[in-house]
Structure formats: structure tokens, C-alpha cells
Length: 107
Image (tube, rainbow, N blue to C red; front, top):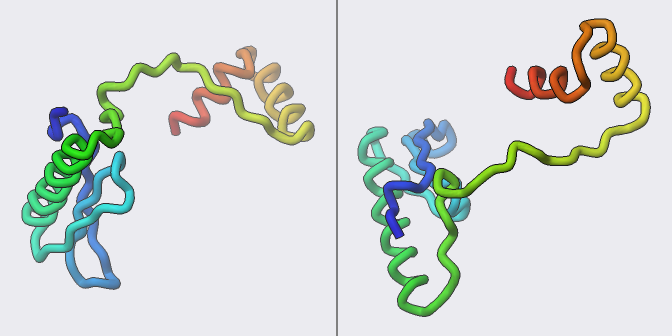
């Protein structure tokens, strides 16, 4: 498993007054540090250690989001009034509901 394929993010934690390194595939892991660079390096080390441990014990290691295949299709249920409003807006714009919703999600 290549830990470089995981989705990392560094943000500021006002509560901790430090930068926090995060990994989307391992939401329970984090690393606090004084600089963004150290926060990223720290969370990467933690992810590497956890992946090594999971592999050693035969547990499931999450696939990196970047390596997963996405069909581009998902189903969302909305209230009928929302559906009607979307259908009306799409008709007024001369586009399909799918195109309208896709454009709204991309904003």
C-alpha cells in the first residue's frame, strides 16, 4: 500500500493553537504541530504506522480515495417540493435536471 496515495490535509486548529494534519481515509488520526510541514509529516508517519500494523494483523487497509474508481452516478432523494423546484429551474434554463444539479454541486 502506497501511503503517498492517501488524501492528506493540513488546517489550523484555533482550539489547539497549532496546525493539524489529517487523512481523509483515516478520520480518527491526526497530528498537531507548530508548522504545516511538521503537521503533514507527522500525520503521514502515523498513517504509515497504522497501515503497517493493519497489514501485520491481517486487517483491512482502506483503499486511497485517489485509487478508487467512481462511476459519476449517485442517487439522492429529495422532498417532492425540491424536486419540483429543480425541474422548474431546469426547464427555465433549457437543461436537464442532471445538468442543473451537477452544476450546482460543482459550485
